[in-house]
Amino acid sequence: MRYLWIEEYLLAKPGVTKDLQESWNWVRYQVGGKMFAAICLDKENKPYYINLKLEPAEGEFLRGQYPDIVPGYYSNKRHWNSIVPDGQVPDELMKEMLDKSYMLVLGGLSKKRQQEILGVSGGQKQVLE
Image (cartoon, helix red, strand yellow):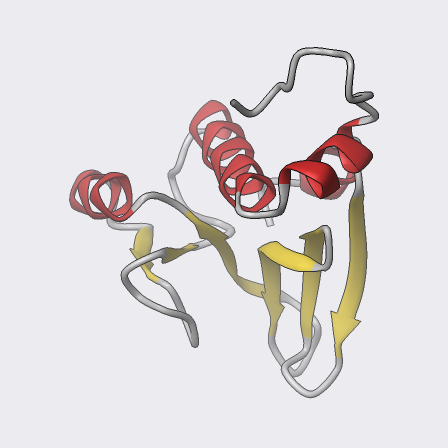
């Protein structure tokens, strides 16, 4: 896999946890208990897809630009996208997509839960408004 930095990058985000969904053999990254990224592993534990969530129009646009971005594997194909881990998607674009996926899922949590994860007190300006 060319994105050797991905785990460190994702785990550095506030509130991110990682687990292995054994029945799927997916390494899942979650915020607030909701998955925002996954590394799908084959029987030899080698990555074959990286799944992440994007706004539908953006995902469709990017799939048209990069052959290594396809509709989400075993996921809602409108919202989820799969990236070939040894493909030609530039690192900066991959980071941007991972950031957007994180923000989409975080933004779907209650404002109270967002504040808890981000360490924002009630008196501070909310980051996700």
